[in-house]
Amino acid sequence: LSSLERKSNHPMASALVEYSRLNSIEACSDNVKDFHIVPGEGISGEIDGTKVCVGNKRMAQRLGCHVN
Image 1 (cartoon, rainbow, N blue to C red):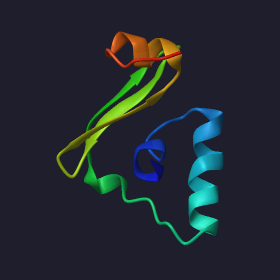
Image 2 (image 1 turned 90 degrees about the horizontal axis):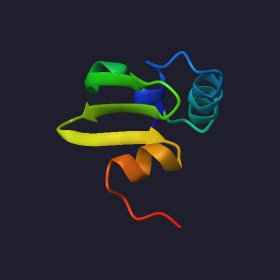
Image 3 (image 1 turned 90 degrees about the vertical axis):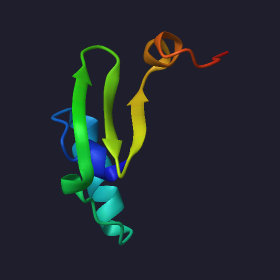
Image 4 (image 1 turned 45 degrees about the vertical axis):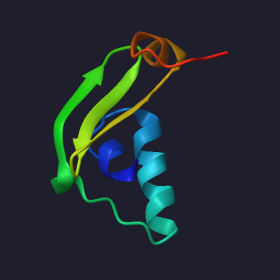
């Protein structure tokens, strides 16, 4: 999460990256490929071959995730 958020300009991203750093988790944004900002929904990218998406309920629904 920290690696992906490090590429984002969202205000919450810097807080998440800082929290990770304070807990000895270093972001490695060099491992992030195919990074996308989806306005109003979230961010996505590929980290070490795994697709990672971080966002809101709308993004989850669009991607086919079951949400309550």
